Length: 355
Image: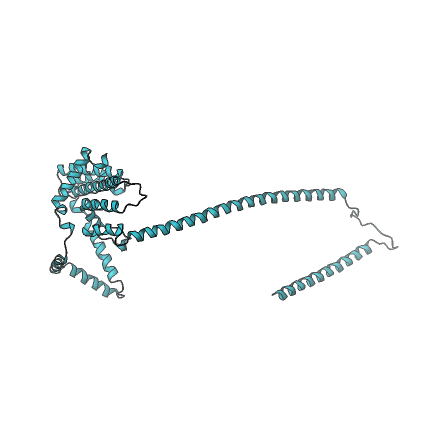
């Protein structure tokens, strides 16, 4: 590589030397021609017409002065740019240092969070205990849903809010860390507030779904939704469009829509979505579209067969060891009693959230 570079440099130098020699010969020929033109027949020198042989010193001085000023101007600009570059370099170093510290801090937090989650997910951890409580009311954490609850599971939580949050309060107190700023009374208050919100929303939705509602049903809904929205905002939840609709528009719709809103729910649409999703996941490996469609249709037919469903239900009842859902508190009478009790406590000001 070095030999090739040297060879290229030598070629360039030879080319430049030949070019300079050629230019020198051309200049000498031009100079000789000019001298011959400036000599007359007798051999005397003749001054060329229109040419001023003597150079103008003032023009040279002006040119030197302008060049000097230009050099000074460029030097001044160079100093300014150098100073600006140093300042930017210092700023860049500061930002890079802070970013490095932030990344290190983020890594430590991430490791700590991972450690906490793994500890909670142990069989005897807090998260495992909470999942056990949810399983008692047949609530499942859907992993495919990002670990969140689907609509049917949310309804189960609402229907069993009293049992769930009472058990959660016990778990939170048992697994409270040493540096926790909450006292046992604060944990109890927090769980009671969330339980109240769930009960009030349960009452509001129950009234809104009444078929052919009467005037007393509309008034009861108004009481529930006013209390639910107040407590909803009190615990720090945001007012979503659905909350706005429940507060501002459902009362008028219950009065104006024939039959009310009870027979206009979209539960069947949500059920179809869930069923379709399960079938698509189940038969996703079947490449033939026709075979896949037939298999999905056959499965839907079997799932909707009353005799098969009765047999499945009987087997499940015999194998089940019982759950909280069979207790009196989970019956329709028990739900209604808890809703009315929560609403009455709120309106009297006896609820924890009112204090």
